[in-house]
Image 1: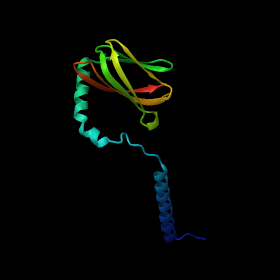
Image 2: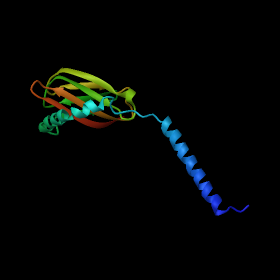
Image 3: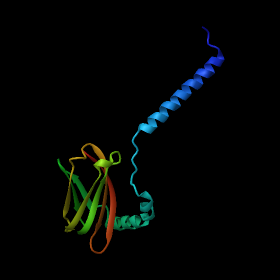
Image 4: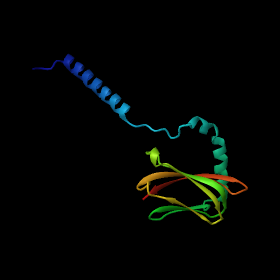
Amino acid sequence: MKIHWGHGIILSFVFFAAFILYMVVHMYQSKVELVDEDYYKLEIEYQKIIDLKQNFNQLGPDALEITQKSDSILIRFKQTPVISGEIHLYVPNDKSADSFTTMQNIPEGGVAGLSKKLLHNRLVRMKIRWDDGKKQYYTEKNIFVN
């Protein structure tokens, strides 16, 4: 049987429609997680984050030292003490692996330790915010936990 050019056009439309239908079904089945549930509120408060990042940048590049041990991540605060603060470990591809850790009364040069048990072989964004009694600081560091 010889295929006429009209049949070719119809087959093209059929294959295109099948492809679009496959993509729609596939997209509805894929899991989509928001970076944050209340991102509108965070966007409004972002100027404060910018100011806290500038405070951190004034400390210089050696203000924090992040090292990995076999079962933990260590953060050394070289230039400022920590009166209070928090560390948010944000895992972009898995919200259930995110964690928050609070810090209190860490002296200058002191270390905060975090467990790595849920984070093996993942890219993690560390969001670190702390207060030394005079200023507040904020920084983000991307690390690959191995």
